[in-house]
Length: 336
Image (cartoon, rainbow, N blue to C red; front, side, top):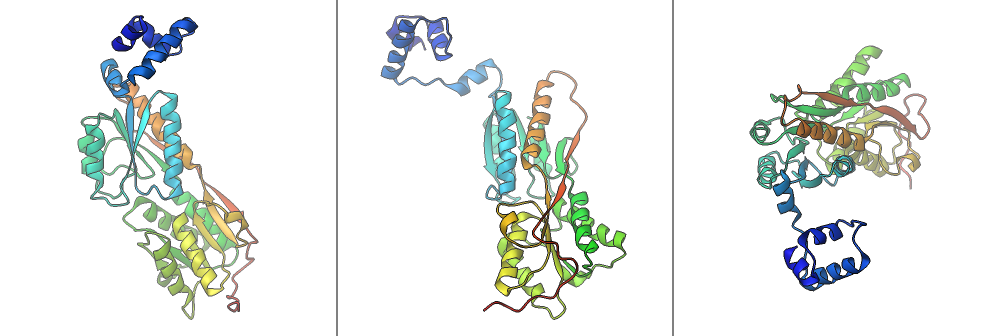
């Protein structure tokens, strides 16, 4: 700024006022400063400025699968609140590989982020305890394991129980369960809700119709095809996330079968597929917003006594698409 000021024949302070669009600077001075900026190719070093003022002004976000629309929406929620409070967001993707996560966390801490929001890729979280010695950490979508920190969760158990209860109320007693790995909190809680709905209805789930460890649409499609090929297959399906639901829908399409499907996460075009769908919906953006608010609150309290760990739960609601089945139906013949 001193070089720009010298060329424009003004002080460095005046250069700063121009770059901040201070209305008290004359138009002639503004034009001279911008001409000098263009000539010298000046760009303000925001990182150096933030460090001088105390803190980098950045927060880090680590998600497990950026290709999943859920995490894209969560990131938008984090960014919304970060921008509101003057922070920038650095985003990293672990690709659901828990062994990659410690390096991503260390890299963000090394880049001087002031805090972290993390969706853990696995149940082992010792590396997060190490990061918490340097910056506050808030977890999203999955709870802390052996850590004293804030987290934002979804009503996984309640949503799965409610959606499964809808199928049971229609007379379905052979409901297949297509779930993500049981070691994940969401997989375990949604199976627990699925089981609880059966217990409340007085129906014993068929364990041979339960498939876990599905990681994407392709594995879900193969599992669903295997179940649909059984002589005594399911009359309805429950899926624990949007990718698994999409894989199951592909299996139904390939076999020419129409079965009611319940699952977590609404997804694009679900309302125009013409299938009987019961979907657990929630505001993924709100998960990100709540996590960012908890983190900003911890950053504001760095000089005082930190708050006790807090847990925020984002509510779910069940939405219905298509025509309810009205009871179990056999699969129609495959189309020509």
